[in-house]
Length: 111
Image (cartoon, rainbow, N blue to C red):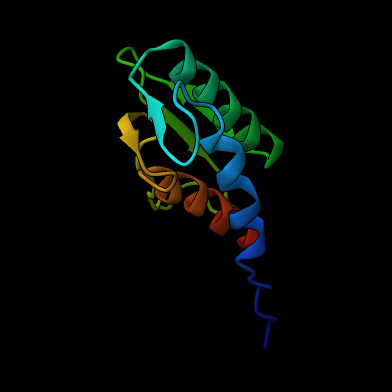
């Protein structure tokens, strides 16, 4: 029988504050209006983290970002996870980002 992946919340919890700091408001609030300078910087940050994890990154014509981990059986249907990283004015640090960074952390654990 194979070994189970080592799961730790620490990896995710270390990345959330760094992304929350990319904001036009002071902590603890987060503001990243879609396509603002802060949103574009946050997108760059997340895409970089995805590439560091060995994922293929693609952005569609309306700005949605997709990061794919190509498994050993690429003919199988993909599994999707995610959310958003833009944030309405004075949102919380976890608004959307847990779904994005949590999905990335799950892939890292499985890798």
